[in-house]
Length: 112
Image (tube, rainbow, N blue to C red; front, side, top):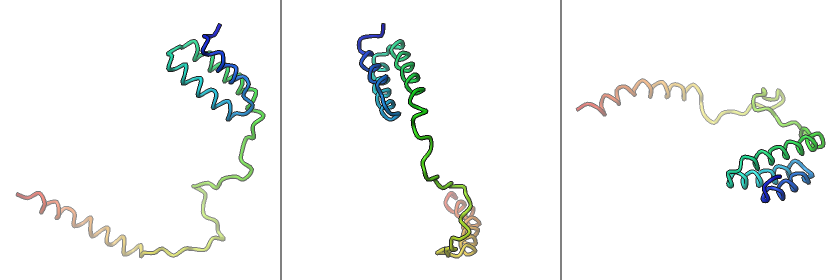
């Protein structure tokens, strides 16, 4: 017999019609059982969630209709080249010059 405070949560979990509803009911029930520090209630809530999820998962759409672009995919060949607002060679030369000057700056700053 589940604890009295758990039965309404189990009823809501078992009555969930979508995965979104199930997630909402489960998270609320789990937080309440965790606050009560009742391991048996947590086990019952998790078991009810898993049972209902097994029923609802096949009914949910599995993927979006339009695939999302991959961040690692190469750029489209038809896309026009966009000029950079700076000269990469000049930027690299400035970087190298500042790195070369760094030991001198450290020496000047930390000398007594």
